[in-house]
Image (cartoon, rainbow, N blue to C red; front, top):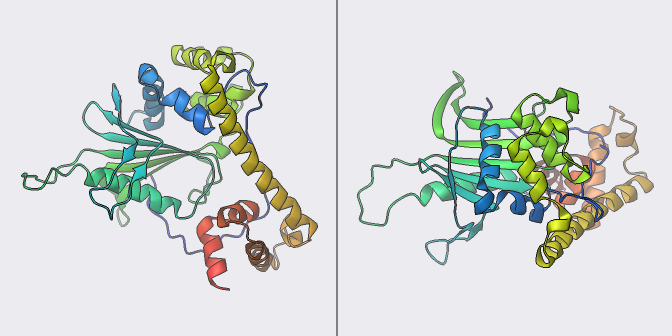
Length: 321
């Protein structure tokens, strides 16, 4: 179990080879890590058994979900000063607990703040209309984020990061009705022979579905059979195919932007210390690269991806200029 960590420390990292995973138009199956693919597989009421099975694999027995109801993914503020919130998926369990499911393809500024805001928004909406009695009893709220980038919160090898509110003196649970579960797909590198749990198999499907030509024997389970049948590109109608093509283009454009920026930085020789993994002067070289790319008007998120730092760390370097 994890508690919220102090992010003030500066993270020193070297350049990492990009672990790009995107579908091609020739793939037999859609890529579930695209915006279209994620919602197509997980966001359909007739196929909600897919999402239920996935969430049960995520919770690993700590919570058992029997049924779900899909909710409106837009949360509208009570007045003009309140911001509207758009979730990827929002569902309610049979006991009234709510699940926010997000697919996050790249790190963004204040990502953890956004997660907190999303969860807090759902909690606050449980309060009854003004004038009604309420004893402040709330239903559980759980945010599940599937991450397709390196998440600096968890330096270990665990690819599932569960975060709850705990007493940091005793490491005991303080509150069990709010939790954040981050699935770091970049850290999942198990081979077929190493897949043990249902979550292992789910991660394998999420990462490799678009590369496969048929369902492997070791995935011979009804829910995976349904996914492979549902996700065939050839079965998409014209409108669905156009939406999928747009999602693929957006993903490729982002990957090309990242790769080009990396090549430029390497060509200029600004990242030599990083590329060679030199310990001496590495932090200063990182700072120089961040400043150089910021002056060239690259986005904070793009800079963070290139130098392999968190967005918050990049912000700190820039603010110190």
